[in-house]
Length: 245
Image (cartoon, rainbow, N blue to C red; front, side, top):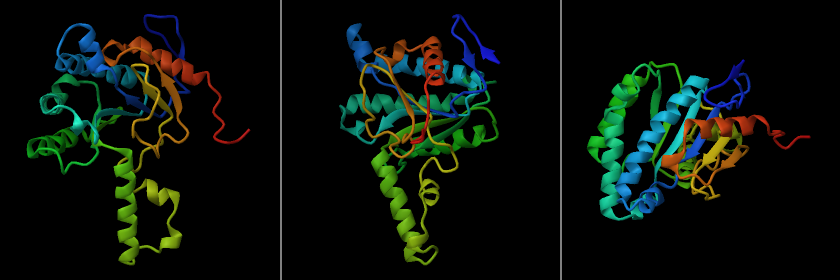
C-alpha cells in the first residue's frame, strides 16, 4: 500500500519506522530572521508540531517522541523559560480539543520534580484522558535529558539489587530498557533533526543506538508534512543491517 499526498513521493505503509524521534530545533532563529521575539518562534513551532503529529498518525506510525524542553534549557533567560512552560501547559490543556478525532495517546517523559505543580497535575490529566486512545503514542520529552534518564535507570536497578529484588549479575539490557522512561516501547528507528545542526543534544542516547539519522536545514516552524514524508521516504531507501551483513 502506498501513501501519496500533494507530491508524487511514494511511501510504503508496510515498511514504516515504528518509532520516530524529532529534535525540533530552530524556533528562535526562525523568529530572529523575521524580527520577532523568540516566543513567536516557539508558538509557530507548536503549530508545526500539530501538523506533523496528524501526518504521522494518518500514516500509521505507532510512536513519536518530540524533544520539547531539555534539562539544559533551564539555562535560557527566565522570560523565555516561563513562556515555554506556559506554552507547554497550554498545549497539554488543549490537547483533547486540538487533537479531537486524532486518536493520539500522549505521554510525558522526563523529570517532573522541577516542573510546577500546575504542569505536573495537567500532565496526569492529559495522560489519563488520552490513555484509551489506540492511535499513535506521542511522547513529549519535557525536562528530559538522556544522561539523567540513564542515571535514573541505573539507580533503580541498583536499588532493586540492594533490596534483594534482583541479583546484579542477572541484570540484562532488557531490564535496563524497562527502567527507562520509554519502557515497553520500541527503540527509535528514525531520528529527525531540523535547523542544520547534526548532533544528539542529550536526546534518547540509549534508544537511538541503531536509528537512522535524517537532518534538514529547515527551521522547525518551516518543517512541513511534505518534509516529514521525505524523511520517511529516505528512511525506506536505506539499508539497515544492525551490525550484520
